[in-house]
Amino acid sequence: MRLSRYFVPVLKETPSEAQIASHRLMLRAGMIKQASAGIYSWLPLGFKVLRKLENIVHEEQVRAGHIPMLMPTLQSADLWRESGRYDDYGEEMLRITDRHGRDMLYGPTNEELITDIFRSYVGSYRDLPLTLYHIQWKFRDEIRPRFGVMRGREFYMKDGYNFDLTKDDALHAYNRHLVSYLRTYERMGLQAIPMRADGGPIGGDYTHEFLVLAETGESEVFYDSQITDLKFGDREIDYDSVDQCQAVLEEFTSRYARTDETHDEALFNEIPEDRRRSARGIEVGQIFYFGTKYSEAMGATVATPDGGRVPVHMGSHGIGVSRLLGAIIEASHDENGIIWPEGVTPFHCGIVNLKQGDAAADAACDDLYKALTGHGLDPLYDDREERAGAKFATMDLIGLPWRITVGPRGLKNGVVELTSRRTGESEELAPELAVARIAEIYAGI
Ligand code: ATP
Ligand code: MG
Image 1: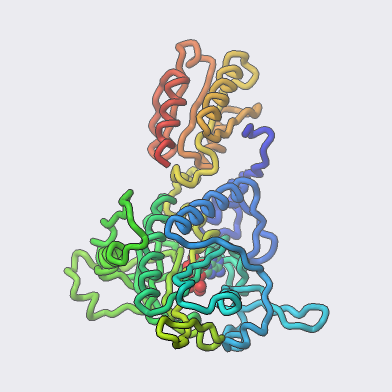
Image 2 (image 1 turned 180 degrees about the vertical axis):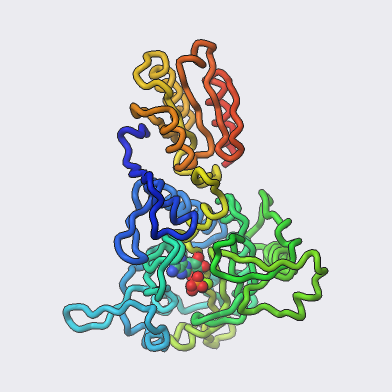
């Protein structure tokens, strides 16, 4: 993409309404625009990152054997009356009446709708296990929407639902989700720690929240510092293997890590003092096993092998896709702007032409652009008639992990400059080598 033909409405001034870095930087980098409180338009750059995150989530869900689908945003109140949550959910639920006077709502989550789908079509243990998920906009009329996309009213969420014959099977599904979530967040360049949490209105005894440590996080968390040394890495997991998934769960949840809701001071104090940490975190996902809570209320039963009929065991599992943009930026930025991890960057690298209109510089940039796209890469070429300083500032703000700087002086010596956004280190090298280097960096991503 050529920047002159793109749409990145960068702001020079720091917007006064933004209290935290991610919100500020997303506004300044022209990624989002508030439409009304807690509701945002996703401008091209923000939308591009949102799509990347969504793709990673899809890939990891499908890898775990979960099946994608799509449910609507608007739901009928009747299903929520069956589960009893129409009254329980309170003011966070946006309630709407259609022209025929029917009560509708903008879905804050989808347990009822998916349970209705399940009971309509599935009646036998032979069709289990089954895990369905979708990525869809949700609406919660948060009392205090703030921090940009971190606590929106409209937000994008992956929510998945497992249906199993027995509690043990459902706990395997729970573990499978935990494993797939660890992989998902690491691919986004994030460390998200599973912490024991509270069931809240969805209910359930087994639940973990995934937290990204950040000073601006809304949750208070307590953990054993050893947990931050754990990496999922590139290990291969057989998601059908009960033992393998269980082993990962044990590895990642055996050390103390809890949110304030479940914090136990006595247990915490058993950790050696130098490893005790209290900090703040951003909740980027949560997994639940809640048994037969919805299946019993809504009559979602299956035939068992011995001819009986039982309500299915269920769990639900959410990832806050739009909140993740904010979380990634909170975890990865400096005073000049965003620093995208390679796995989610909107463009793979930037090309900065120091002297637009100079025949040699223009030609070299065009060649670089072609060579990079030839490798399947997606560069952003700053071809505007701007001062070098302004171009660098824009690139730093947007935060692409790599920048190639092209100028007449370097070209005389046959070199361009390759700069890492994260370290600020630069290297002069031949244009072909710069392309090869970038292609190599992204080859494994
Ligand atoms: P919170 O405690 O932050 O209000 P929650 O526990 O109510 O969140 P869940 O029902 O667990 O949220 O939803 C799954 C995920 O959706 C959360 O882990 C979070 O990442 C995301 N999410 C929830 N509420 C919001 C919101 N208002 N804005 C953006 N993302 C959200
Ligand atoms: Mg939650």
